[in-house]
Image 1 (tube, rainbow, N blue to C red):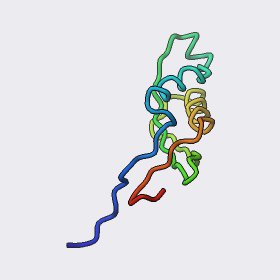
Image 2: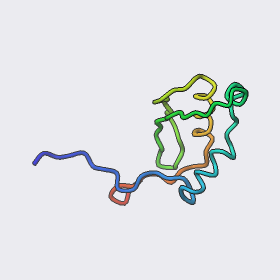
Image 3: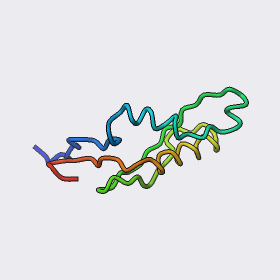
Amino acid sequence: MKNRPQIVAIESSFPDGVQKWVSYLPNNMVYPERALTNNIQYKVVILFIVDKEGHVFSPEIAQSLEYAADHEAVRLIVKSPSLAPAMQDGKN
């Protein structure tokens, strides 16, 4: 059997769990003016890397809506508190 890439045993996560993440997003988001004016709700998908210290870097828009919404989504991710880094075989 060929060697397979290792699968991350524990994914990175927001400090204090998903409920805090769900609370962090709306409490820190600055909704783009155009979206507010036109009552637009949106979803932007961002891919990013979490380093060993839990800092987010290399954010990349995977699903875009429009510039202001994309910019705000990236800002939210980059400015978030440090995440718990992923672990594999007991290592970050």
